[in-house]
Length: 90
View: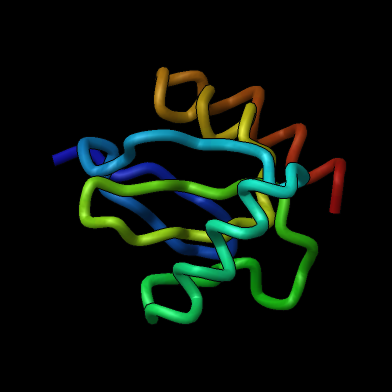
């Protein structure tokens, strides 16, 4: 089983991820609120700004402070460059 880092020491099983999107659009914000009301939101942003929303096959919604592009690169196996970019952003 392959896990990917989604920030702040948190990991998610790669095979459970359906999509990774930006939280900026109104439909995504509504979906997050609906999931929050249903108790399906996992917020791992640790108080930081949410930069990506991860949808899983179990209908959970994970909020992360890491950019969607960075998480996507981690899914595709490009780790070293992403870790350096994240360190510069903080």
